[in-house]
Image (tube, rainbow over all chains, first blue to last red; front, side, top):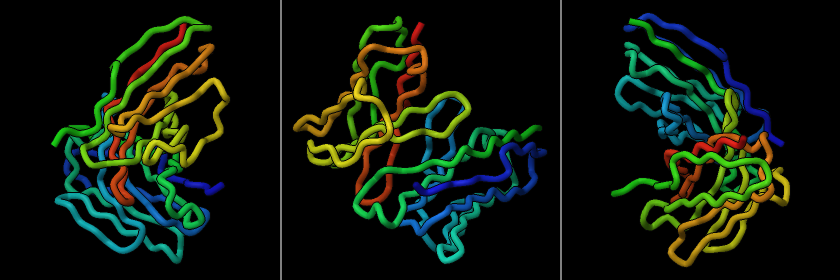
Length: 112
Length: 110
């Protein structure tokens, strides 16, 4: 099956700093989503981005489908950004399926 | 609009028991998927249902089963619980390609 690798596994930032999280995937994808899991376990949708670039406030994401990677940018980080960030994909061969394959996540800690 | 809802929020069971978890999708969403997340890992796909039919099944034993009702809500059943079934169980509903997750049910098997 498709492999999803996220880096770095852990990241500690000072409040106000910027960061880039990376997601590599081993096959063409039909669907790519970024999620933020808060300390209570809720998975919050950040972006649906199988290709291209999107921005939402301090967050932006870019997926380069031909090179099989996606980047999540967090600018001016805040303590509320802490948590685990997951990248999840549906391979192109699974078109019509909603079966997401998740990476292991990047655990972000923002300290005041 | 209400998001995906799940019940119960927490559950404690003993080995060998069975458990039923419930999920109500976002209004208008016809697809429901279930995921298991053990501590320190990303969620793993268990089942997908669309219009009451099973559309996909992950690598889980037959002790796991699910169904979807005419109102698109869903149940996940796990029989003969093992200690290793302790996890956060997440339900997601989908409209087109984007999946939206509920708050999850934390299951502890003792």
